[in-house]
Length: 288
Ligand code: GUN
Image (tube, rainbow, N blue to C red):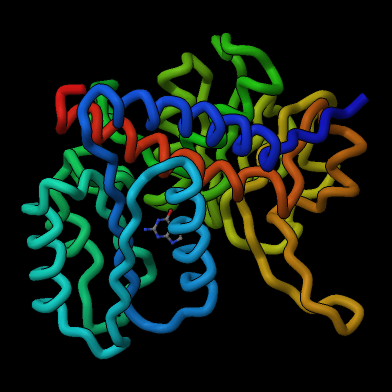
């Protein structure tokens, strides 16, 4: 029987646990963890994400503030706001929603965030710490994906053959680093890879993060594999808007041992891990 990995339920459990932890820490320190989310421009998908992040933070007792800046904001203005948040003791986590408008250099902004408050785990210092296996704030989507893999396969992933499809800085590369830390044998495949389907079909753990709707079907999946679908693609089908992953779910389900749906798989975990990171940052900054 194939296991459908219910990311929504897993994330909901995590949030319940977090709410208890937050309440205990508030009692102990007299302070609440604070998260600030900065959104530049009007991207509709980003607006939805930012709203959800704020709602779920409040639900677990994290104080969440939003800064919405217009599309034509200069880099200087954004950097000044990041600096203000860096220096604000009530803010323990800073997230600048991506993508940013074209007049702003993403790397410059991400590097300006204090690494200790970088709850996205995108600052080069945190990327480096992950790479050498040091304690750091981990990127939310890959970290959430590892939780779901362990939920399906158990805590020990040693020696498993893991293939990550996609080499982005946000998902593919950190995902590979985390699976390597779990002692998996890791391969990253991408648009220039030869025999991509054959390599994927040997994976015990197959992680799809390419942003191409339903690219991966049963032929790519090893019998009994754990399939993690990070893709969120909006498509039109039968005249309706639909959300699909990078995996053709119905087809892959027939071969997989466990598989995440879209929606309701990795998506809910991303925000849950952001809240976990905010708590981690709070504990470290407040020595709690
Ligand atoms: N845009 C899409 N995913 C993410 C994410 O995980 N963090 C931020 N900051 N922006 C995003």
